[in-house]
Figure 1: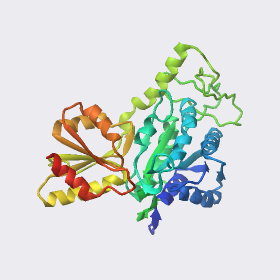
Figure 2: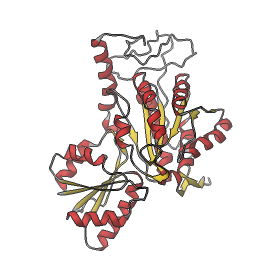
Figure 3: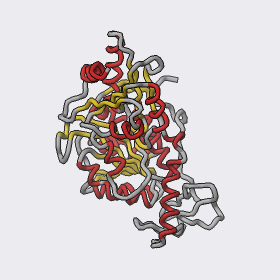
Figure 4: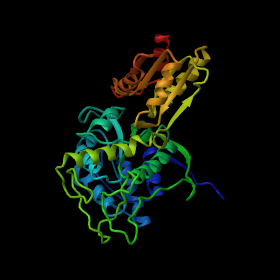
Length: 377
């Protein structure tokens, strides 16, 4: 069998991955540097019986995607920069209503309209804390074009499995660069579909069996009674002001993520076994970090990389172990300091945590990362 090999842009790979996962509805608004995701979705969705709609703004884009998910279609929306800010209220709505949805943010320079065509990793903390209130968060970050494909598939799987929005945090570099990738054959990657009501049983929209944390989900229009609200609600979906109920519901929503960290958290380690210093990075910055490690080792400095693939939830257990192994951890990210504070929180002084980053639209170079490592040693 001949391999399906293509030269593909990261944004294009995102769409291909979404279609592989079963996406059949896309709603959004074009914005640099994510626009190719909308363009490719508009081109390809009709070929598989799916629907694309361009809405009037970013708020309507995610609202329509939420609606598509409620009708039983795997749905996605994508944005960049200020568009991600505009989606935050409806991200919160999707969280409390437990709506499976993939939200792609191709990060660019900010704040505000900032640097539309320049790379950044400035929404790491916004992905966690952007919408108000307490809620679970799952966010993934690819470093390559092929990984963009794979993590888009994984984002859909996790959204369906845990009935929650999942974010894919890529950036202008990964989104726009082109690499050769092999598209997996159908069935090669696992595809997860949401659990539907059991035939013959009374459907309770937010009811769960004992020991289960994720409610089954009926499609709107399938004949089941179904109410959706942004208010705290009881298991029927109708609003409830009961503090006991609110506590129970929020606890269940959080636990469906917190109790499954082994399933959710993914990372890569590069040359850490014999390393004397750890570089901590993610996304496009991790590419520069790998080159920096190769250069440092040529100079006799044994550096290694921990690359976060799952950004949220944070890999606390592994990072604590790294703090016991290394005296120095250098966090390399394309901002002035975001994920570094999470590393510091978990390390709690067990290792020295340093930061190297920038937010002026330039890429973070291997030379800059290597220079920081030499500075702290």
